[in-house]
Image 1 (cartoon, rainbow, N blue to C red):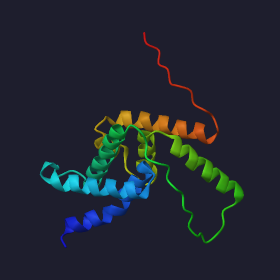
Image 2: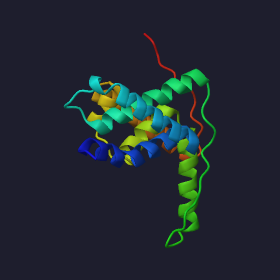
Image 3: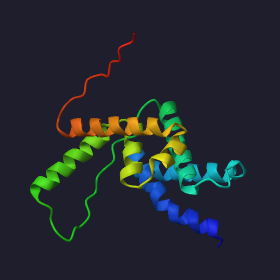
Image 4: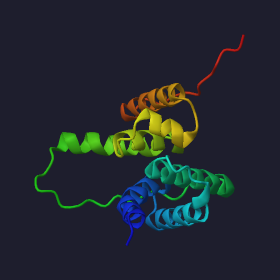
Length: 168
């Protein structure tokens, strides 16, 4: 097994976790990861040699999700939450806060979920996210700020109204 195969194998759980956060369904997430890898391998010659493999694969996966979402015209079914055994039981208050935050996270649009996921779970830098989305870093920062604000509002039970812009 060469180094590239090993690097891709190490990225599989991260890709699957990200796909699951987008699709909210195990089988759809697995299909999305498989399609991502097929696309990456078929377009391997187009990859920049100096580019980050992780960012490139996340970019492919995210764009495939968006394409599938547009074709389908609706979101995938809700992700079923399975609880695992924990060594200690969290307090009721912490459980309620966690559940409320997860429910709020589900209500965010796909782009906001992706941004929060990449920063919070995967630890990607703003620069890496900007490369994935092919936008300036400032755009990533402002979109992330709006995503965090929306998550806070939804977690606090506020129902955000439509964002209206004034045109001059």
